[in-house]
Image (tube, rainbow over all chains, first blue to last red; front, side, top):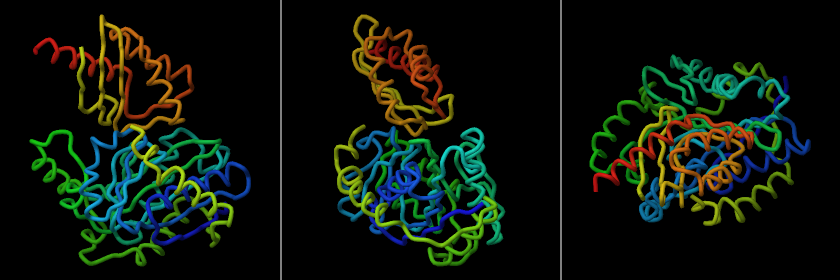
Length: 252
Length: 95
């Protein structure tokens, strides 16, 4: 199986979400083939799931003062603080082997790319249904999938480093009185590759490791490519009109 | 009655339900959380269709509506809405 591979480096939250949707549009219309994309976030960002309420999840004033982007995803799931991480997205038509079976089947298959990447680094990781990857009892990756326009889109994060205190300075918690305990719980349950390896492990280090991991898990031959001009135009339009627009961000 | 509920759904994810009802009929409702549902836009439609439904039938209407619209929902069960509505009713009764 052949898969286009594109690596787009660091971009704003609105552009990153715009390009995932731009690729989905191109694959849905047959203009592009199934694609694996790696990317990162600059400025740092908080993304919230499609069904989450902006005000109740995000401290927008804190995000503004710290220069952190806020974006609503097209996918469900929870709020994510994107800083020291590698993010991937996979887009494939629903008839494609990567989108075969139930939602859980395809989560398992695609999260396998993260699991194999971690194993290649000597970290004994496993898929934890519905949508996480864990190692040694700690979450190292969160993932979110949707089906749209006859295509599967899954994007997910691989934590290279983690700063739980900063995360909770940006996100709100359901019960302020229990915040201290919640922060301790999350510190015990969330890990990172840098922590697992006991040395700094950055985005550039992660690229080859996870490229190999996805190729192995998906049984795919990755063909290096670029986003097409049409995909980039679409991404910029969506970044301006949708993901960067408050109508979308604050819709819930 | 009027109120909100936040708690872990039996379906596995966090549910935030805001509910306003009069005479046992839903006047306004918001179903939010970190669950999954697709196509996402149809969930907005399903949520809006719950206005006017008897509070006692919230979960049943949600389940039937999701099926009718062809929505796939993960991490949230129809009965979670009933449990959340019951919790809101109980907190209203206690006030």
